[in-house]
Amino acid sequence: MDTARLKESFARVAMHGDEVALFFYSDLFLRHPETREMFPISMAAQRDHLLQALARIVSDVENVAQLKAFLQGLGRDHRKFGTLTHHYEPVGTSLLATLAHFSGEHWTPELAAEWQAAYGLIAQIMTEAAAADERVNPPFWDATVLSHELRTFDTAVFRVAALDRLTYLPGQSVAIECELRPRIWRFYSIANAPRDDATMDFHIRVIDGGALSMALGRGLRPGSRLRLGPPVGTLTLDLSSGRDVLLVAGSTGLAPVKAIAMQIADLPHPPRVHLFVGARRPEDLYDLPDLEKLGASAHWLTITPCVSDDPAYSGERGVLPDVVARSGSWAGHDAYIAGPTPMVEAMAARLASVGTPQEQIHVEDFGWSEPS
Amino acid sequence: MTVITGNDNRLTPDAVQAVSFPSARLGRRGLDEEHVRAFCGQVERELVRLLNERTALTDEVQRLRRRVLGQAGNESGSGYRQDDAHVQAVRILSKAQQTADRYVADAQEYSRQLAQDARRRRDEILTEAKSHAAVMLEEAHGEASRAAEAALAAPVPAATPAQASAERRELEAEVAYLRTFSDVYRAHLHAYLDALVRNVEEWERTEKSSLAAVRADLPRLPHYPQPPAPTG
Image 1 (spheres, rainbow over the protein chains, first blue to last red):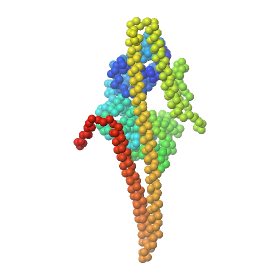
Image 2: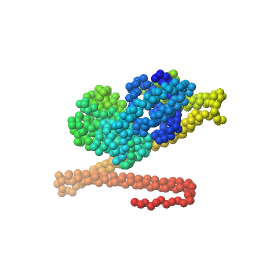
Image 3: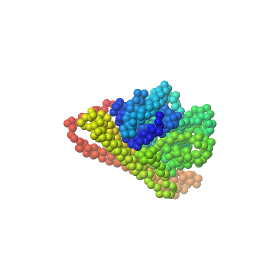
Image 4: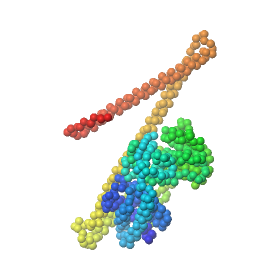
């Protein structure tokens, strides 16, 4: 395979940005109208994903091992969208038509053959990974909402029951799709350690104008149907370290952190755990009663709520990095941090600066920041 | 500033979207980040538009060239081959998709603004209520303290033993404090509830009058079905 040639050809096509993905999907939907059903109404985010994935594949084309792992993940991940083996050929046809269209006079039969071969390889790796996953897992898990509670202006907590058991590690997250917003998937952390009755809790922060979070935060009712994707995420407890544990949660970052605390509660010899949960106002500490219940029965657990924007608050005042840093020495702890991006970044940097080794700092960045 | 340009060192829409600027050092004047982002967005859209125009023109040139050279022998009178028709269809579908995308984006932006407004209003109301409550408590405390002092200063019947009279004075002072505190508090609560009721009434009145105005604007229907009677 002439990788240099493929890269050069892709760079020329990619100059056209969004128009490339727009052409690709229109071409696909015209040739195979039934595939339109697999996508959301607005395709803007979808086109970004496609272009990013293509750019990643082309830039990694010489780094075979890394590229293969990426494509295998992509193949497994596409199962929940309803992608089947027979969809790969139409996609290849439309991809080549798109490349040909934007290459203009640079498109030659030899270049077409190069791309055909490259796509064949990509499709093969993705379909093989999907087939291997199919032997172990369903494409997604059906779940029903049991209870739903709007705890603050923009924070909701709900519990679901999955029809088939979903095996996951505390701290992991799953992609959620709900019937109110078909074909829109977003990742949310599971807020409890696995239970015998296979129920799972989720904490939703409603993002202003958010495509899915508005529906999950305010639209769900008991009985609403959801689909859950396979569990992902690396914010999981290191059981072998023997170190004490520092848990830090901002906003709904509490979800994975709480799951980890519940996991520790079930250990025969739990390490000492200090859990910090931060909010701007006291009323935004949306899960305190439940946490206090957990803390009351656990001598190994210390819980410190803190509030940054209310000078009248009687407990710890300040932002999480400040409160945590002044509350102890953390160099010998395993730290697990989750929440809005700015908070997670600031907290991880502060811990590093007070001597916690980088490999003991585990983070889950939610990719949004709280409105000011 | 970090810009990643394409292989031939030309600026692409993606590069404009991905450009990052370091923040100004503390104490130095910096540009408003939102303005810079908005401008980059405008530049990106303009670049995409120009590139698309160029593609469309190139297509047109090729089509015309084919026509002039007479290469497409079986070409119909309209000048389109089957490939052209497909590309036209792709264009039309793409336009429709972009329209749908814009509607969804507009709706999301509208709901974002609504939520922001609601949050701001909530914060204002909460702050106002908190300061109102603080004023109310202070006033009740002030009046109650004065009542207690008055009770302490009042003369005691002469025959009471000294120990008992001191206790009695203290109790009377406490009773006077609590009674006044609760009176002031109750008066404030009454005023607050009255204001709430007035608000609700005004809200109902405006709703009714605006509904009437809307109904008056509606075209007359031949017959207006009665809503079904509730069954539960």
